[in-house]
Length: 497
Figure (tube, rainbow, N blue to C red):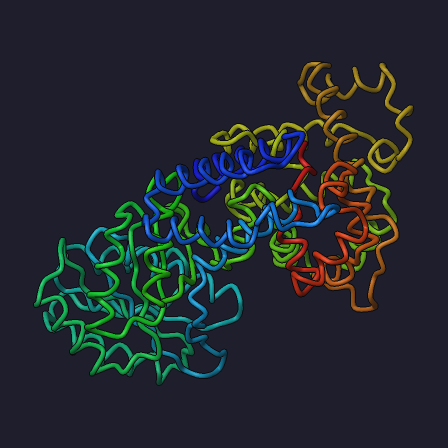
């Protein structure tokens, strides 16, 4: 999970508050102080943290709250909203359109992961139907063209550069013109970086921008620089009018919170996060789902979007129908494990998915969890069709379990563990029973059709009680504006307990 340490600290603070018998000023202050310490430790700017704390105390005035108000819910939502406000610039970035040529210029300091990020950005859009191309206008760093060439070849993306030409402006212009003629609709220009801000760097960027006339300039920033991000982003913005930011190396970054919040303060929106070295370790930055995951609440709508990417269109109505019937078989679990393994980095997937996350993937043990999923799937490969499709728990008797263990080369206790995981997940997914399936059956239908009654079934009784029962849930859904936002905020609260 991105910023996992910060997420864990904030989640614990909220949980301690929820466990308190009476919510008074002392409990509120302890909760806010714990969150403040976590944010400051993550290097979030002090002024932003102080402002957040003041705003929450204004909203959550315990003396003014009438009897019957759910104080826990009000505090949780105030924290959620203030963190969203901290990270939301309110300024949308330029969005490229398929079929219409867009030039995107990447800038940043050397070592920020700019060249790798260019390829990730191209690869992300290629998977969604764009025709991207890469231009290496970095003639300062030895090996820059080789790196871009290697990345582009691996991702099967056309590229342009030169070993002989030393003028980056000339290379950029030639590359952009070539790919325009080839009808590429996303031309990405990688520029030089330096170890520090230099006049020569900014002059080169200015000349490149003037020559290529980019539709969007993206500032790539290493998350580990923390609060220094503010001055960095401002300096680049003054030179080439930065329109968006991509924060890299966010996996386990202690100072990543500072990078995110400081960049947000410059009014250049963060659009992607780099979460690892691999091509698919790259995720869209969307404020509400990100904060929801940061608070340990999961991101159900994000998970549904991931499912939409990996489940073939012709299989989607069938999957939705199975979920709506509430009959969660071992075969369905097997298919969902396959989908999860196809979605990319398993840590990203599990941080979105309530129910799977806590037991199946402890923090920092992604590889172990991936191995566990594959182990479960190997055991299910040794099952009969009757066993995979049955919803009768009594079917799996001792002799069948021993046969499955022998067939998969595992111990009986391993098969028992897998069956316990199945029972736990079946209990969670059974709460989706009765969900209305629209005719076209697209995956986002689950979040669109999740009304208050269905939400009340999915949420645990304790959680429902905390937010004020059915009435409190209906009010909260109205305030959130849509059931998708609601799912993003509440997706994992209490479901992984």
